[in-house]
Image (tube, rainbow, N blue to C red):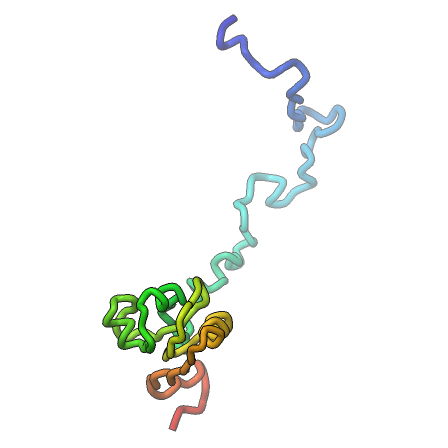
Length: 162
């Protein structure tokens, strides 16, 4: 047996319909394209809308959205706080110990366990973390977020901030 003799099993492939071979029988004359017009004569590109600006070009080329008021937190988990072995934890202490970065807002999350009473000061605390800290006899203090200035006016707004 040679490579050129190998092929699909007999009857596995159906021969394509041969259209446009004279008016005798199905698929003759217009070959299933109807009568006259652009689609009967030649192929038309996908998305072609007859000269009108196509939908894919009419839609603006936006690449997502950046929320100017997003508050980004640095996540610190309970097991990290517990490993410090301190009675009080603040963002400054976390930066000094190398757990958080300087100038970031801290959010305490509930991964891990806390064994001792710790007084935690952070910008945000998850519900599970807060429950675990208070259950261990600790205390949670939420710090105020730093104010970044005047909120920008809405796009297209006739009013400005005064």
